[in-house]
Amino acid sequence: MRSATSVGANYRSACRGKSTADVIAKLSLVEEEADESLYWMELIVEIGLLPLEKVRNLMSENTEILAITVASIKTLCQKEKTKIKKIKSKICLDKL
Image (cartoon, rainbow, N blue to C red; front, side):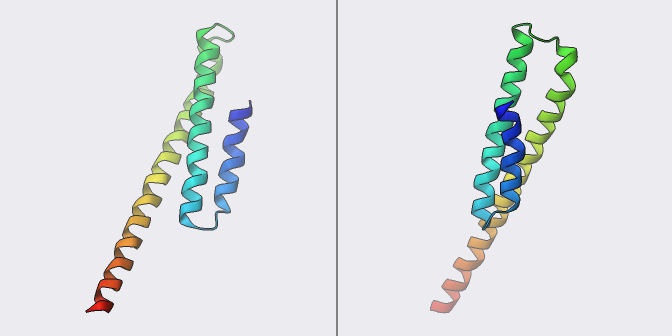
């Protein structure tokens, strides 16, 4: 329950990030918590607390959230790299 609710809380925090690096850091927490939630659901099924049929939809949705989060982090990292390259290019041009 804690890791699952942390996904939403950290995503909300990421939406209020002060910089791209801040958003990436906060989304990384979302990724960790979503992965932890998936672990707990797998464990619940493995030890027989609930049958897979009861947890399957939650696991599927969690996996989708995890994939979306990872894709978002990759996109933001790529944009950040592009931004840094442009800044370095301007610096080099200024020195010529």
